[in-house]
Image (cartoon, rainbow, N blue to C red; front, side, top):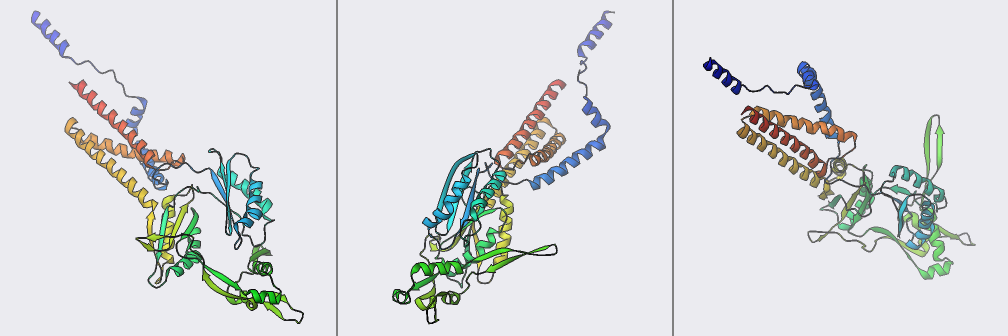
Length: 435
């Protein structure tokens, strides 16, 4: 009896108590519907991959500049007159809007810029419409030679995202500057996401009218008359549209001069004898080059540089791809382009290095977990689940309109790191229970 009692005591001592853990309802459902669970995960991963490819990528999170700029061009007019007839009326009209934090302007040769900075939480799309309405209320008073005011969204303090250098073995720097101003600048400005294009270096070509003072006095012509005739003759006007059925055809009156002979043939006045006094009778009209107001040097050599600025909400990678495509189309035997700086390449390289470091970290985790816990399959499966978690997280980022940048990627990887900590803690707890 004593011997049997001792055996029973030993049996009671060596018996491992049953665990009180019970599977949850979710675990039981997954056990019963393995195929459905797999399909749900595959669908989420597929949506995550699509969202991952659609989310814009940037280097750092960008706080959009809460400001807009009204830009108006009036060629051939000095800064004082620009300020008087364009800048001040726009400022007075726009200043009645609510939520304006700062209002400042720049009047320069042939151009007016009015910068409006709003509060940080302002809706720029609505403000842009309001500004257009305000500008239209005063723009009808502008001279007809004035270009239509344009409302732009960009940060005037930002740096260019692209620097392009046109190169040619057969053209000199003056000719390259002329082509850049006349053709290349317009092509780049037409790319969606580009807010401003600045051409620097070289001397811009212009038309120089050298007046003979003696002839002007002899014909009774003063400078004001000559200037008014030139301004009235050099413009394009859109008087309206012609409707044919359901089609509206715009009508343009082309008055912009296209050659030196057209300028020379402009009539200044008519004498009593019936003789017409033209510009060519009192002045010489030739092409000339304006004094250089900006310089660009690459590797110690004078050159022409094109600085491209991005709109605050534009996708940098899409703008870069479209820009390169347009430059390839514009290249020919006489002219090619070298991109000295592309911010998109910097962003891609930084993100690529970050992902590479994360991949190395996952591989080291699999190796360490396999050596310590002797669970190679479980470690690989867990890393696969973390990858799926990354793509599933992209779905939420897409709908919340959150870009990929170093900060958001760090957040995702930290989340994966927390899951790794949970996995390691669970393995340690399981090993402890087994022992």
